[in-house]
Each structure stands twice: as structure tokens, then as C-alpha cells.
Image 1 (cartoon, one colour):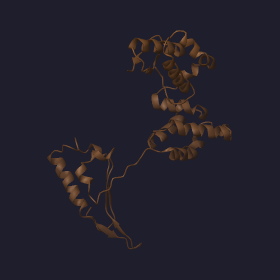
Image 2 (cartoon, rainbow, N blue to C red):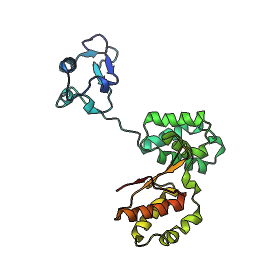
Image 3 (cartoon, rainbow, N blue to C red):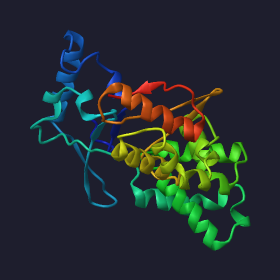
Image 4 (cartoon, one colour):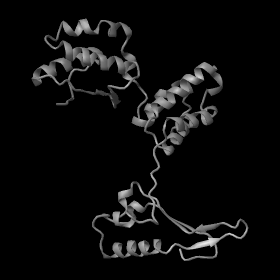
Amino acid sequence: MDNQTTPTAVILNLSSRYVNSPQDLDEEERRLYSRLLLTTFKPKQHRVESTGKTLNNLLFFLSNKANDIPAWFYLENPYVKTLHIPKPERKTRTRFIESQFDGFVGSSEVTEEEAEKYKQQFVDLTDGFTNIELNGLRVLCRQEKIHIREIGEAIRLYKHGVKENLWEEVGAEKLKNAEEHIENRVKGQEAAVTQTLDILKRAVGGLSGFTILLIQVSRRGSCSLPVPPVQERLSSQRRLLKFFLEMKTIATVLT
């Protein structure tokens, strides 16, 4: 960092792994960060003759989060700035699929209206993905030759390792008659039945609220009904889930 001949940038990658605990440094770790701290107090500059600009030598720490670095190193230090790089927001994910859409299998076979639909689906279902995961999804679709019309299944495969969506087995007729069927078997829990059916209908429609995965050959899921006592919750859940997915037992009851 004392170089004054050429502007220099030093990148310390994986800095989250440099110390065992940022709050409890051993002697060697303390000496390391103390020397780095003193270095920040003496920034070196270099004047670029071709442009006439003066540039600082820079030191970058790449970490998972700011508190992986000892707080005393960057707090109230005018020579140190912390920058948070967020996960891609909706606008960024939209730009990604717009620029990469032609690389997906079958992209040339869909109409403009269908293309917009699948782009929108991609953006909605990849909420929370990192840049690496977005690119990994693109590579997965290409390697597995997954058609753009199956982008929902591709995202499910990337997230959970399964493509099959059990909600597709639930038909419109079963949804239509669900409330009447359940209320014939579960008494005195109208509000709980209504709320749970609403969650299940949203799940069938691809909205948030309830998720179920196929793990090997078993069907598992969880549903919370805040209605005492426990036996009544078990009864409601058993009837509801067996009705929709032919589940004989309830694996988990959230209280």
C-alpha cells in the first residue's frame, strides 16, 4: 500500500475466514488488523500524468457481512467505508432475463405474449436469488434442456432438487367442493377451515402461502392452525391434507 509509482488496489477475498471470531481475536489476528488499521491512516496517492488525476491506493475486504471484520477496524474510521451489495432486486432480475432469454431452450418457439409471461414468471419466482444463482439457473436449463415453458419446474428443480409439483394433481373440481367436504367431517372450526382452504387455493394457483415438496416417494408438508386444543388441530389438518393429497399421517404440527 506504500506504492507511489502506480495506483494499486489490493483485494482480500474470503476475509470472513481470516479470524475465528471478530469479537475475540488472538494475538496474531490482533496484530494483523492493527497493522492494517495503521495503514488506513496513511493513505498513499499517485498522480496519473496522462489524465492529471490523483488516485488513492485502495484495500478491499470481501466478506459475507460487515461484522465478519472487527468492528473497531471500520467504525468511526473516516478512511474506511462499508458497502453492502444486495441480492438482485426485481429490476435487475428483469434485465437479466431480458438479456439472456434467447439462450433458453425453446425461446424462439413462443409468441411475444408467451415470452412476456415466462419472463414475468422468471422474475417472480427468482426473488431472493443471488447473481450466481441466476446464472446457475440459466446453465441448468441449458444443460438439462428444460424448455422455457417449464421455467417454473426448472426453478423448483434448482431450489429444491425436484421438478414435480404435487399441486398440479389438485383439480378444479376438488377445490370447488373442498369446503363442503371438509365441513362435513370437521365440526366447529369454520374459521380455521376457511383460512386453510384459502392458503391451499393460493398454493395451487402458484401464489405464496403453502409449500409442499416431493422427497423421494413420500409427500410431506406442514400446516399451522392456531386453534386449541391440539387434538382438534390434528383432526382438521389430517382431513384437509388427506383430502387434497391423500396423506394418511401428519408429519409435523406447528404450535
